[in-house]
Image 1 (cartoon, rainbow, N blue to C red):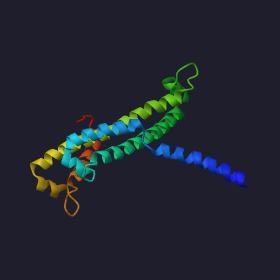
Image 2 (image 1 turned 120 degrees about the vertical axis):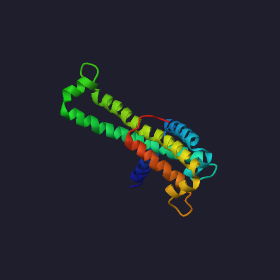
Image 3 (image 1 turned 60 degrees about the vertical axis):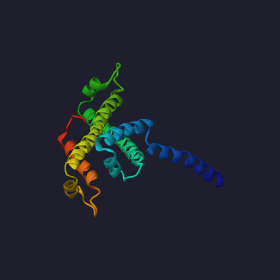
Image 4 (image 1 turned 30 degrees about the vertical axis):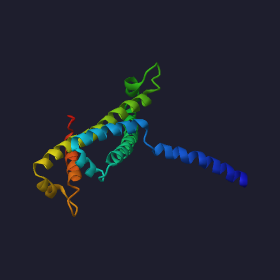
Amino acid sequence: MSKKLSALAAVVALVVPAIALADEPSEQNKQNAAKECKALREAAGKENFRSLFGGGKNAYGKCVSQHAKKDQKQEQKAKANASKECDAEQAQDPQAFKDKYGTGKDGKNAHGRCVSQKAKENKAEADQTDKNDAKAAKQCRSEKAEDPDAFKEKYGTNKNKRNAFGKCVSQQSRELDEQGDGNTA
């Protein structure tokens, strides 16, 4: 009985860290997040940027952490959706699917190549929403500069209306996402 428990404990000790690592953003996710946050900070301005991420001097760190996690989730979702898209395409016409994506004489790698291609496309679409955040921040910064009090009244929803900038960015970014605006800031 104790041998079984020891073996089970050893397996759990190996599996748990592997699962935990799978949830951690990659270095590439962190680098992408740093670029997004720099663009967002530049577009929003220092004070507005801090208000977006809870204020304080650690706003940039909070931004990078949030965006790195979001970037990883976007990657995972892009791959999962790509696999489903490829499965559906393959089911419609298996031979045409092999001809389109496969290489070599048997085309056995068609599904993997399809998933890779579609995952890149899906991730590029998700990345556009991050670029829209910076574009929205720039628009909100201009609007706030015109009349700060009217800006707070229009967008602020909490007691002191200090969340106005974040609410504005969220609303403007969502509108840009819905428009499918391919132009970047």
